[in-house]
Amino acid sequence: MNQIYLLNILVILESIVLLVISILLFSKTKNLTKLKQYEEEFIKSQAKKQATQDDFLPMLVHELRSPLSVIQGAADLLIKSTDDLSSEQIHTLLNQIKTSSSTLLGMVGSILDVSKMESGRFEINKTFSDINPVLRDECSYFDSLAKIKEIALDCQTDEHLPSFNFDPERIKQVLNNLISNAIKFNTSGGSISIISKKVDGACRVEICDTGVGISDKEKPFLFQKFFQASNQDGVQKGTGLGLVISKGIVEAHGGKIWVEDNKPKGTKFIFVIPTK
Ligand SMILES: Nc1ncnc2c1ncn2[C@@H]1O[C@H](COP(=O)(O)OP(=O)(O)OP(=O)(O)O)[C@@H](O)[C@H]1O
Ligand SMILES: [Mg+2]
Image 1 (cartoon, rainbow, N blue to C red):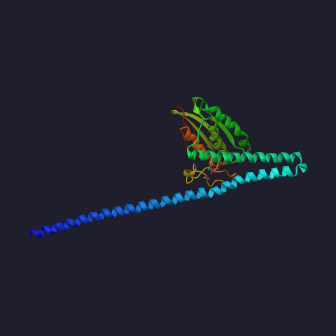
Image 2 (image 1 turned 90 degrees about the horizontal axis):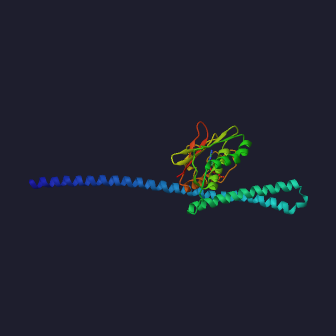
């Protein structure tokens, strides 16, 4: 009797152990399925990223070819028809060569900067300076372009900002890209403010515009190589490298750059660089 009783207990115990093992196995399988799903999603997103970058290479080469063709065409005309051209026509052709060469140089410079950043060979030359004159210089440099587009451009500098170590040429490059974007993605009657502020142990610079803005959906991709938002209507297309380079430069200074909405309209790019 006792033996039967013991046997029953053993069977019950065995069933309980089996049940626990099944539950454990079931939850492990669920985890594995989840893991598999994550893996598939990751592979898909990587493939998509690679595809956009691969798609862009032919486009980039094409972009490089357009200014080159203009240079070649203008130079051909100058060589073959010098005697038939008026001095005004020669001047126009030379101007086309100059503008296209600058565009080409700019593009090649951007590609080189990005490749240096990606391989960790990007260097900055810091000097102890005041950032406010750099901001004011950039503001006056863009003033005529802003006026042509009927956009008001103003610069508000915080005179309490201390001098600190930064690379003025590279910071100019960041401002150049942010201000040219603020003009490019703006409309007649709009405005742009360039503001410097002293914050705790750092210098904060804001470039605020009342332009077309960027959707929340697209904001997370802004600092990715070659990314261009769906707001390019009526805009001369760039290479989509300006923000990547700006981020690389700000980070090389130990700083941070990000984007926010400019209330009630437009976009605000902010970067902060430590002053100590
Ligand atoms: N101030 C802004 N307002 C609205 N959209 C902006 C603004 N700044 C950047 N963007 C969006 O972010 C994209 C990426 O900007 P980025 O400066 O990297 O490239 P780009 O201006 O298109 O080309 P590049 O600067 O290389 O000539 C732009 O194409 C645009 O869609
Ligand atoms: Mg740009």
